Length: 116
Image 1 (cartoon, rainbow, N blue to C red):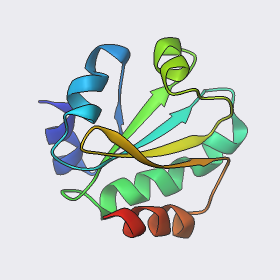
Image 2 (image 1 turned 30 degrees about the horizontal axis):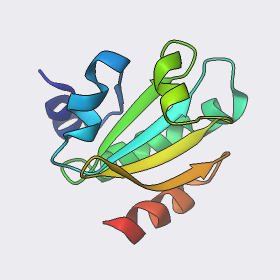
Image 3 (image 1 turned 90 degrees about the vertical axis):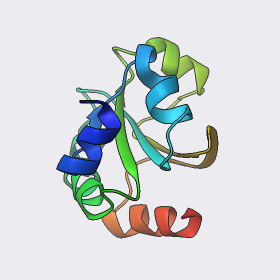
Image 4 (image 1 turned 135 degrees about the horizontal axis):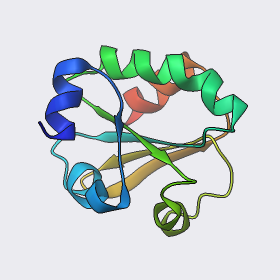
């Protein structure tokens, strides 16, 4: 099952690696919200329930992906990730919006709704 199918069916964020980033994010038919995070990041962990809720609520309209910057250093460098959590909304292979720092579920929804 591809990450796109898994997200659409389960409504859960999917782990993205450097190997599948192009396929799952840049070439996605759906807009993709990418959460750049790390295991040691407390604000990232605080945002996890909101990210998971958004993945469920927007299933079929939006793919939600997670990139662990400690495991995927090339992706972090490619997108100039300097602070985490960082959310990037991709559409048609391009970054449409970036938010750095912890934000609430309502702020995540506002970010998404402004671009969908």
